[in-house]
Image 1 (cartoon, rainbow, N blue to C red):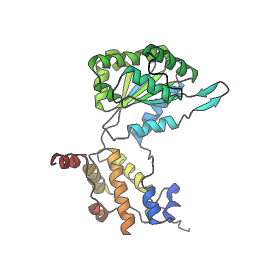
Image 2: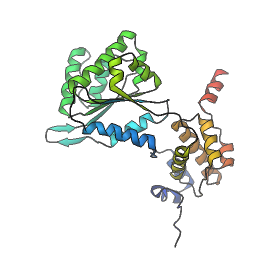
Image 3: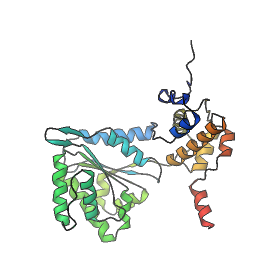
Image 4: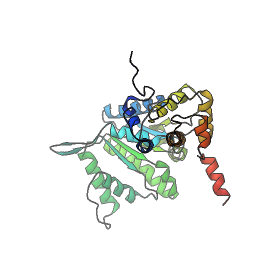
Length: 297
């Protein structure tokens, strides 16, 4: 049997491996997705919401995890799985994605939602009630079934009264439109929801925990490494996986940063695989080390 070149790489990246070192180094920083069990289960659960009939108490979820641990990437994959389409009557958008404003007010939220839907921005003098009516009309017109709100922990940046307003808004939107909703944020988002027993009961938690040494962690890292256009296979054993998780503090974004920068060193030095030498040459600092360095300023 004839051996194909670069069999250690994912099929989609084998042609990239024939390119120059500069092109391969740049390819490392392209967006990528590696499937893993927790994310696959979460994605199926959220897509299930689209199949459910309208309900006065629609199914909702709260996606929670440490910062830089794959929440936004998972949500973007969810949204991309159901692209907006056009019909004779206008746009059809089963999923709408919006971010909670960094300085949250009901008005800013509605204006952000209107912008996401591609509608003209109302004048600044338009009152919140009119913005609400416009948003409800637009969401009905596009046939929305799932509203996704990322960075939900930003709600805590507002006053206590503002937080209560937003919690009431969530209840209002789900009840009035009978649509499912996914909120996403750090553990602080869960604290905000817990202040309202009714919403806490409605929003079922989906937790993306920090990674620890396991078969799933091994699978994730091998999947990431196989997407890097390196000429030699990178064999990451259990000790290497434990080292990576310890150095990155176990979040998928940090793991990707460390592996990407190590793979770039492997390309530029001609080592062409991730190994102990390329790890030692990497000056990457994990979150705790970065905080310690800033504390010395």
